Length: 534
Image (cartoon, rainbow, N blue to C red):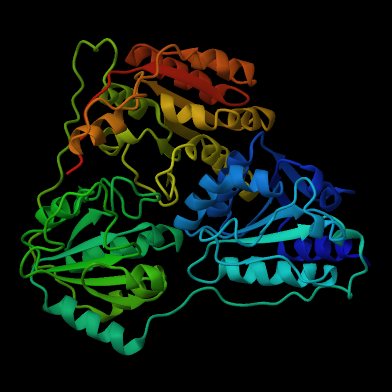
């Protein structure tokens, strides 16, 4: 048995039989004699490779295996690696290295300092000291990727290692990957929640990732507590946005969050940082007289919280324990239901407003559809017209970097297919974002995935114009995007592509897209609009 055979046998036992990659010369010895029971998902650029694997792992709940090229390819993937790290996605990322006998001379394609390159955006980076350690390194990488907080790990493997003799079959180890909270600290949290008069609950991405959606609803209803969404820039939604207790997302600024939380004597944040701030608008972190309790699985997130007392624990486990420990408060006055302006103009605008486009999508969205959003300037409209009402049905980048959404939608659809689920993936993408990873739609076409890409074509980077205004930075260049022929790009990459200029067009083309055998790109011309960032 050589290292190649021992490693593939280990991957088989771990269930890691799907490899996301773009093959490079230093990776071909790993990919040689590729087993028939493994699947290779080819993407045309490493940033798309990483984002697809990220979303796939989030859907399947298991670490995904990524294979990228040595230094240059790893560099291409770094933006998406940051998103996976921030989303706490378990990935085992591998890259080839030059032949061990030549590394000392730094030949072409050498990764000069392989374990430094991906840091700090991996939990562990390692190049085995000897070829025989490769299978054991994979086992360790798998364990580290899953341990809370989950996240990507990186292995650099010299191309000559795979043919070397193995020490024997790799040992598969079992381990848990949920951490229960400290019993005493949890009891104190429950006491403080029971003493609160007007508590607010804020549920972050960790709740949905841990399978805690229903538990979050049960806790909120037992307490009759006001619930806020974590952030407009969240990567997962963890509470039904049409629930009577839901009061919308918190703003993105320090001052805005404090203003929104005024009147609450206690705020309980579960499953996210305190808070996701951007841009800088100074103010108090909390209103005067407001206390904050914080639950997260991530020690770093607990350590850098700007306010409050933190408790380490898996989101779902902690919520379930709190449900048993807190007192029911049916007497507490519920907040007034959130009222969205669900009224479209009788005569459509030309170009359409983002709200009109989302309203048309609302009319035809299948009940079980999943939304992937990378139209940052229209997130408010999406929450109004396409609220997330099911667990695991909203995904966005974990880092805020552009270029995740298109390959992320591909990864979601592939993850659904791996689980035996079929649902429509609605990927709402800005025209600027679409260009960052447009090549990912080729993979969607090759696999005939049920994705409807809705590209909102406003001809500019709207979110950046809003930031420039807020930051007092006039005259910033490069904000406009004229002359993009998105439909032609999509056609050239193998996708069905159409234009939709009216709400009726959107509804008609969307229905046709759901009946097509593969992805469709619908280009919708929309009006630019300023964004309220406070």
